[in-house]
Image 1 (cartoon, helix red, strand yellow):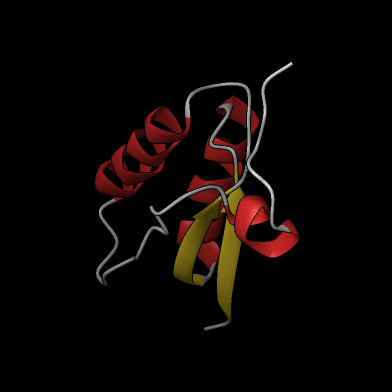
Image 2 (image 1 turned 90 degrees about the vertical axis):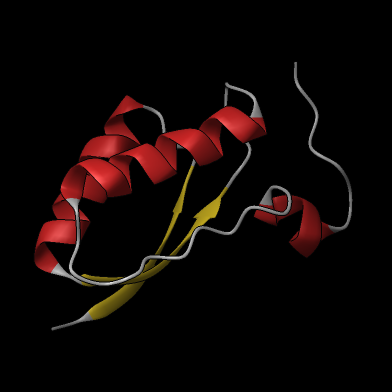
Length: 79
């Protein structure tokens, strides 16, 4: 089985993509990007989606801060 890491903002389209990926691949982890909802809500959405799918293995969710903040070096902002 192919192994992947998913980077998502957990919006509705990403949730469908995550469910599809969980079905077809071994998801090694989920990172959260800046999106149009609060970061903590995005984490809850990812955890809930994993819970609904019930994979037979642990899927870690990166929960510290939006990954783009860590890569680029500045905090995310909302318009």
